[in-house]
Image (cartoon, rainbow over all chains, first blue to last red; front, top):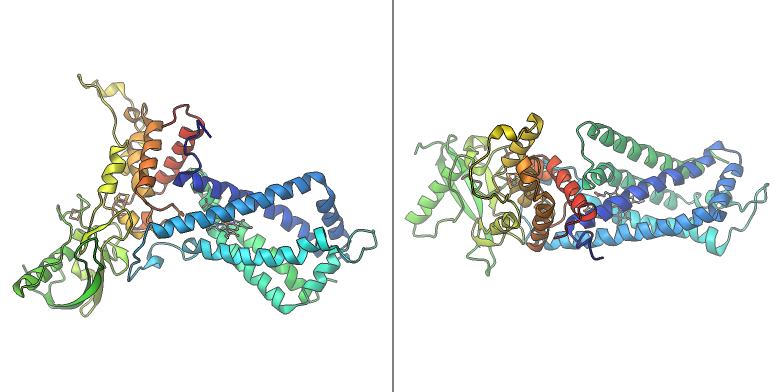
Length: 226
Length: 256
Ligand code: HEM
Ligand code: SF4
Ligand code: FES
């Protein structure tokens, strides 16, 4: 890319990519959470299945799905690259390092939290995405839509899976408690009049989205939804 | 030197040079005054060692009043020890308790190789500055200062950034050994003033490139640097640097 020099290969440029893909994933999660929350209507999944059908067939959404996967892969790839480089920047570790004296544990554990998320994502994609896109959803609902809702109810009868999902939402919450505001700082969007709003929004977003997502398997497993 | 009543166990990093491996070595000290500075306590230790015919501990220091930035010691897991907003020379033994064990290590970063014991080579910082941390001024008379009005807020922010003493505590404490706080302070002190404008976007590109070439890590925005900086340099400077970097790469037509 002549003219842009090392815009994206420099340390700051790499973080720009991290921040942009991170914010993009944050936006995606809003859509994802909204559609999934349709199960709480508790109408036997009819509304939820309409949403799922739309997501599976709308060409714009399908194109978005490609962008989403690219964004996610770039985020993961860049995270790996940054983490390896950062480890190389301190070849000899401290015998004593009092990290908690100056920073939050989750800000120092983004790689670990991200890795937990990645493991979860593999399980999660296998559970739902592979089924709805490739292996096929076995039944249809009263509207004649593929009954993804039934698939979900069946998956969440398994307590181990429910536990994995809940644990993953803890990871997501902490990943974003740091990541949300961090992305703004990375992109240079630091402004005394807005910093409080960004920080507050980040905390609320992280907590609400994680609780909503975690509530889904819990509600199904506990039989609150049928 | 006043004698006191503190007994301490020190675990000090001893390393002959950058080609040999180092290790923590235990030393017992007694009669330390709580009024001594941390460096004076090390003077007592070194006197002891010299009297015993052993090699004294090599450590960096110069002004001993918190302005030169030389006194790099990683004390019990924190740069410059347990107090905020002080350098090692400004740290007093009354911040510790009688009977304490104190672990003292050098700054640890690939870009700061150990010279000997607690002394590291921070010339990477000098090279980052040399890459652009200056303004080019033609000779001649200085113009009237009133020709260069600077808003008070701007002047204050530049002054605060200029308080950086180049100690390297930010690098030492960062989990990634990133130099972003230091480099952003050196960029901001000029970017905020009219004199710094002509070279503003060249400067940020050159200095960031040099920072990367020196092998410092990348920033995760943990905020540890800001918390440990003896001069209270703010993370805002990092955001400003990132913003200037984006402008220099995507908006300015000058690529360095
Ligand atoms: C839906 C999932 C995810 C979302 C919404 C998300 C969001 C974010 C955000 C907003 C940031 C902050 C970027 C910045 O500081 O500029 C971030 C950083 C990070 N993410 Fe993620 N992320 C997700 C998944 C992952 C995964 C799967 C991994 C790893 C395999 C990962 C690893 C990291 C790491 C290591 C960082 C810190 C980078 C650094 O500052 O050095 N993330 N993420
Ligand atoms: S920014 Fe603070 S910690 Fe870093 S070198 Fe400057 S004075 Fe030291
Ligand atoms: S010796 Fe100069 S700042 Fe400590």
